[in-house]
Image (cartoon, rainbow, N blue to C red; front, side, top):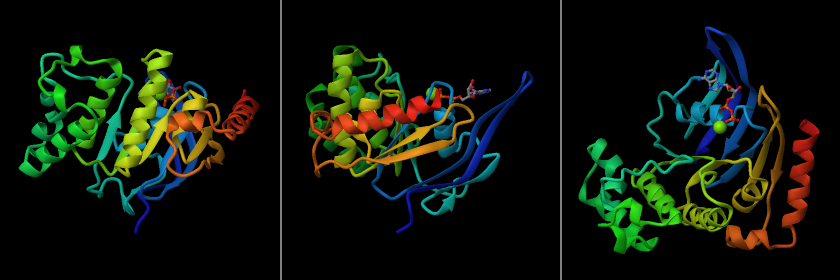
Length: 254
Ligand code: ADP
Ligand code: MG
């Protein structure tokens, strides 16, 4: 089977009338199907740019992005995005929101709707289909946003600081929840975060980017006992060693 994603020698600069911003330099990255990586790095180092290159909204200046073994432009793989704000429409019901992507793409088939209903039931939103987003907790809103993304059966999920608008305590439970769902659904995922603990609790590997132009300065394999949740990882004895390693890598940067 092809790797879900491969970036080869990818570099990127933004060109504006004010000049050039060199954002990413010689990025090499391979994600087997079903892997979950975290990316950390200083603010402005090119993390969101990396996700835009993978999503195909911008093209690499040099190097290549292969999705399922094909150039991003030729690939029919679906990319799903999850952002800091859930972007749920307040005037639509929860159900109306989670099927929105299917509606827009004219993919509201009975199979797809069945899948959405199964996801809502499995992840505790079955009784809230008719509710308005404002009636949900912050955590349930993020879960609804994830199900909206999963409804399109993305091959790769891109998460750009999806929890950073939540307060600390909610953030712990929501990241546990979302991380567990993504694993259960066996999705290939990339989490961008500036929270080192979150990166360790969710990823199989944590990639550390240098300051701009972002370059991968370390990749740290994260190994915990199989099938433990992000929350359980946080209290495992290895956790603090990973934290210290990452902290050192990031601060060598500064
Ligand atoms: P991060 O997500 O790591 O904070 P970004 O990928 O958003 O960083 O940005 C990397 C660099 O590129 C920053 O210096 C940012 O100001 C610049 N940048 C981002 N988007 C644009 C754009 N559309 N045009 C020009 N410069 C941009
Ligand atoms: Mg960003």
